[in-house]
Every structure is written in C-alpha cells, then in structure tokens.
Amino acid sequence: MPGHLPRRTARMRLTTAQALVAWLVAQRSETLDGDEVPLFPAAFGIFGHGNVLGLGTALAERRDELPLWRGHTEQGMALAAIGLAKATQRRQVGIATSSIGPGALNMVTAAGVAHANRLPLLLLPGDTFVSRAPDPVLQQVEHFGDPTTTVNDAFRAVSRYFDRITRPEQLLATLPQVARVLTDPADAGPVVLALPQDVQAETYDFPDVLFEPVAHRVPRPRPDRRDVTEAARVLRGAHRPLLVLGGGVRYSGAGARALEFAERHGIPVTETTAGRTLVPHDHRLYAGPLGITGAASANTLAAAADVVLAVGTRLQDFTTASWTVFAPEVRLVHLNTARFDAVKHGGLAVVGDADTTLRDLAPEVGEWLAEPEWTARAAAVRAEWDAHIDKLRAPTPGIPGYAQLVGAVNDLSGASDYVMTASGGLPGELVGGWRAVGGAPTMDVEYGFSCMGYELAGAWGAALARTRSGVAAPEGLVTTLLGDGSYLMLNSELFSAAFAGHPLVAVVCDNDGYAVIARLQEGQGADPFNNFYADCRTSHATPPRVDFAAHARALGCAVFTAGELGEFRDAYVSARDAARTEQRPAVVVVRTRPSDWTEAGAWWEVGVPHHLSGRAEYDRAKPRQLRYTHSA
Image (tube, rainbow, N blue to C red):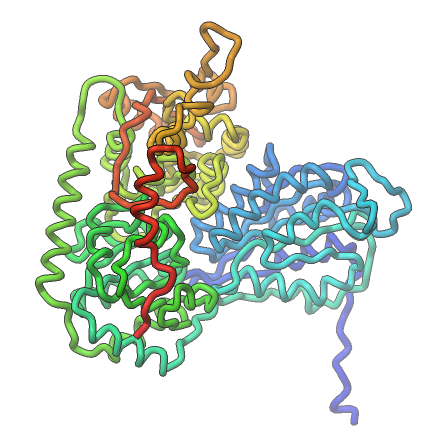
C-alpha cells in the first residue's frame, strides 16, 4: 500500500572522510547539569600521507565546528584527548588522528590508558590501501601470512570497539556503534576506526538523516529490585559497614547522593583513586582514601569492616592492597553499572547506575543505623591520619619532600581548581595527602594504567576542557605534578599547550631518577640499580644534568624555580598568575627529597625472588589474600 512505502531520503555525495566529520559535528551530549554540548568538542591531529588529504581535508572544511589542535607526539595528543574526557566526567569525547604505521602505533599506549580507566576516546588512524595496488606503501608492515593484517590490528587488544572501514557505506552501520560505546556507562572506552587511505577519499551518496543532530543522554539503568532488596538485607545485618566510592560515582554525578546515604545510615566513607575529591575532607564520616596510595585510617577501618558497599569501582590492586585490605569474612556488596565489575570476587552484584541505585537502596535499608561506636572509631582514626599528614606537611629546612609540596599546592589552590598526576610515587602523595573542599570532582590521578607522560599531555586536555572562549576562569586552573622521569618521557605537549594558549601549571619534582621504583627495589632487598642516576651506567665522572627550567622555557612556558619550601610557595603563586595572564603553561621546577614517602600501611603483591630480604614479608602477607568474598 502507498501508505507503507518508505519515505524517500535525500542524499549527499561526500567522501568517506567528509561524511565521518559531518557525523561527528552533528553529535551532541547532555551534561550532568542538563546542558547540551558537542559530544566531540575537539580533535587532535598529526598529519601524514595516511590522513592529510582524506580526513585532513574534511577536518579543514569543518574547522569552525570541530576545532583541530596540532599535537607533537601521537601518544601525547591521544592522552590529551583522554584528559579532556575525564575533566568532562565522560560527557564529552576527544578525538585523535594520525597517519599510518609508526604514527598509528604511537597511539596504542593511549588506547590502553583509556581502556584501563574506562574512559571514552575516539582514535582515527590512517591505514594501508584496501585496493593493495601500490603495496607495500610507505610505512606499511607486510604480514607474510595475512595481507589483511596491518599494524592497526595492534589496537584490538586495547579497544572497546574496533572497525576498519573498507567501504564508505560501512559508516552507516558502524557509527551508531561508535556512539553507543563512547556514551555507555558500562562499556565506555576507546573506539578505533582504522581509515584506509583510498577509502577516505572515496565518495558515496550518504542519507541526509545521518547528519541530523542527535543528543546523547548517558543512560541510568535501574537495578533489579530483588538485588536491591538483598543488598539492603546484608547492610541491615552489618555491625561495621564501610562505603567505598569509585570513579563510577563521579561519572554518575552521584557524590551528593552517596553522602546523603552515608549520613542517613551513619556509614564511614572512603574513596578510591578514581573517586577522590567526591567527599569534602571535613565531612564527619570521611575516613580517607582506601588502599596502598590511600590513608592508614581507611585501611584500618577496611580491615575491621564486616560489610563493604563498593560503589562504582573496579577494585584494582592498589585499592584492595592486592586483596589484603579487607577482613577474611567480609561481605562485599558491589554496586556497579558494569556487570563485569559487579561480579568480581563473588560479592553480591547490584547492576545499575550509581545515583539511581543508591536512591532505590535507601528506603529498602530504612531507618537502620551503623553502630555509634563504629562511627566514632572512624572519626578517631581519621583524626590520627590528619595529624600524621600535618606533621609531614610542616616546614623543614632545605629541599622539600613530596608531602610538603602537595600541601603547599593544596593550601594555595581554590575549590574549583583541578589537580592531576599519574605514575610513580606522586599518586600516593596526592591521593593520600590532598584535602578536598566542596566535594567536586577536581582530581585526576591516572593510576589505572599508570602511564608516564600522562601528567603533561593529560593536563593539556584538561586545560582545554576547562577553558571557555580562550580565557581560563578565575578559578578552575589545572595543576599537574610530576617527577623528572615522567617529564623526560613525554614533554612535547607542553609546547602544544603553549602554542594553543591553554593555561596550566606543571610542578616538576626533580629527584634524580625513578625514585619510587628505587624505593620498591631497595625496599625488597635488591641492590640499587638503574633507577637513580647515581646507580646507572655512564662513562662520565661527572654525568650531565638536565636543565629542566631551560628546557621548559624553550617549549614556550613561563618558568620558575625553587630550592626550599618557602621559595616553592612563592614560585607556585607566581606560576598561577603567569599561566592565567599569559595564557600558557607555567612550570615550577623544584628539587625534591627522593625518599620521603607518605606510607599508608598496606601491602602490594609483586614477585619477590626467594633470595631477597623482602621475600619473608611476602610469605607472611600472601596467605591473607582474599580470593573470594562472602555476599550473604
């Protein structure tokens, strides 16, 4: 019947690359505040023969609608895209595009960062010719047994969704899946669309509807009522409950809901690394961050808790102290939007959005309250931890320690400022020692993949996300802390940020090498070797030192130096002013005591050879490791 005939759809003749970019421009996203913003607010690119004419031309044609920022390493610009996604609570997604071969492979590490941390990222690497007519092309790696294999297949292990576009019309099927993965709270992660050079330039008559604006709302799945009822039953039977808040609480915007739940039932609250700053430091139920990089107060409570309600966390080893932080008979209730995480270690799985599920759980728990003695104990151990941190932060003569630097940055930052680090020893200092104000998500510690170099590259992306109309807000300045090792590993995006005009402050702690790995090495009884410069092979009687100040200045940054704590405080204030007024990165280089660490009293499993002194502690701790928990 005529009434059932399909409506004729208008068509547009576009190249594959033009169609892809047009679709990207049309995608919108709803923020946690209900505002509608571009899903893809920025792209980062380094052009080569594998992407400059196809995708590069398409991006140039839409440059006002989808800004493209030039990167200086493929890994760095992809890490910047991840920093952008984290700073926007996964409501916006950064894009990175490269040429084929080495440029593409340079983004694999960044894909690993996004995958481990459940952060959305869209990677568009160029690929070899589908036609194979010019094979082997420049930068192609030929696979002797499979001509369809290219280096981009290396992304498969670190992608949530991977596709190679070998025909233009394949976009019609794959783009909805791209949007699904990037906006799904359970599946969020890196998406890789490999774009062969010839296919990028091929034309096709695409339907107009593909380019109509679409607003993506992150779903809030409700849990099964039976699971909620069972979780409430377990909680009501608890004498010493503990609430653990992870990154999923942040991305759900459920921080206030979680605190309301804790207050209603008198449950002490801890945070994971990804959940840090959701709880104001002065909150009466706050017990500190949990785990190896956390606080002894939280770990003490975890060892005594009989029920743990873990919300939005994948419970990695630094949170669980390799599964030795909890009591042997602990009952685990695991609330997570991803069933994969919710079923870990045999806990009671409650699958749903954090905010929605906590809202449903509260009336089921009813008027039940945790025992007052337990709440009082939480306050007491937290006070002890605060006193310990106060002592570590106190001024001392000479070169400052990490805790003193973190304390100074903390004291001089505003409630809306954003602080970052990754890898090495600084995550433990920042997570364990930072005192959050206001309960906003203002910290990004990349300790899922612990990728050296994220500190600077990710900070560029965060600065871009927190910059509006090219001017940084009076508050909301990004500060990143890193060691000299991370600086040397990846620093080129400092110039990218300087060139783009994105302000941030970088605190470079110069401690003469890879200090935290030296700590692990020597702490287990191994000889100092190949970590501090003094323990590395060299042919020089007096080896050269890096002039970090001169190097950062050469990359276009404002630079300040400090030798003791008072000088550092002054330098940091000056750096903040310079970053804002000059609209570029400001770097503070400070000599730092290499071996003064904030200890949280938790064990970490690493392979310790039998002949090292650390093996005895390994043998004592290993039997305490939980392989399975009790859910009922």
